[in-house]
Image (cartoon, rainbow, N blue to C red; front, side, top):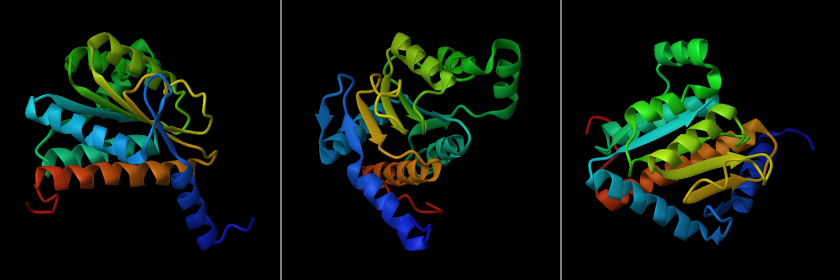
Length: 198
């Protein structure tokens, strides 16, 4: 198929329409039930004064930073991505890159906090180790993944979004849209305008 603008946009739209939400037992959740549960879970974290942590690699790391910044600044939710350059390189150099997120979670996270993982493959070793750490700590977990339906991230979350596409661009675009949907629904629920300068 020719890679025209409309073809690409349509492929993103079709991937989103075919995306599936499941719980940790691979039981299907409707899109609305899953998004409502994610928003409710985030609101509970906010009310309890707990933290939302977001992690990813590469482009997914920038999404983690983007949404941590937005919901922290505009949503008044304690949120952070674990992408500090000095700490990532220190842990990666001394303890292995597969530990860059899990070590930080063991330092900073507490039971009842929320971890959101963004990973196109769902199989990155540092993401999987972070998910195991989150389970150990007793965190709530939401995963966003793509590529293969049996990726390693999907059994972990209370809510798991899977995008059935093999292209990084399509999966990343889909994840970005779903993250915006989460944030915009948080705005409506909390009645806090997520606007610049607020």
